[in-house]
Length: 98
Image 1 (spheres, rainbow, N blue to C red):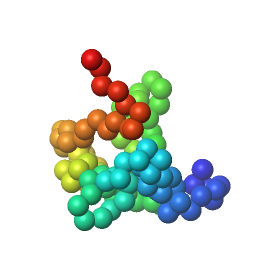
Image 2: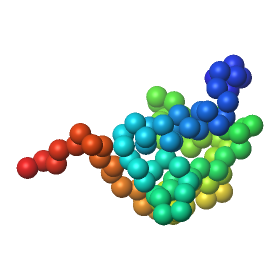
Image 3: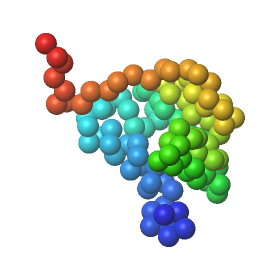
Image 4: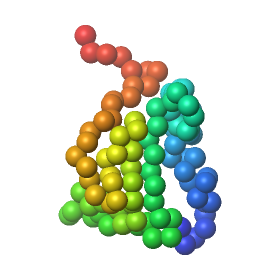
């Protein structure tokens, strides 16, 4: 898809971050601003590509340098840290089990 130039990198990032957060009314997610929850991905746009397959789905993408979830590194210099700082997010239609 990158080679087809269908979307700019900034448009693609918006479609994966701010747009879904906005659609789900998650007002403290989707953009980097003071006081908001932040998941940050740092990657090399020229080399990033997926290597996972159906047979081996748990493969990290090539070119992924850092991933921070809620400010905690989960990928550091391309290696998993073992940290699990994420949490389940429920949209406005969620109903807790009784």
